[in-house]
Image (cartoon, rainbow, N blue to C red; front, top):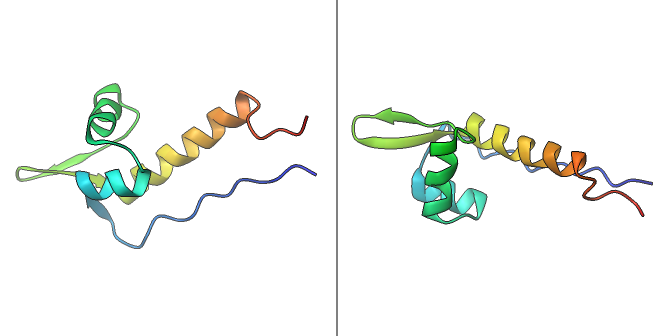
Length: 77
């Protein structure tokens, strides 16, 4: 039986600062900014602050899971 990978829901906040998104995604600052530049992770600005919506974090995680399924990751041998 194939295991279903189900991501944990993003906590109940709506917006995260870059350091918080780094912790949630377990990624470095440079990787987060590269994802933003590449358009793989969405952000908004409030004043001078760059904020990542919780919805964008969840969409990015879902996208990673879909990409892993396409490449066969997690498939039984």
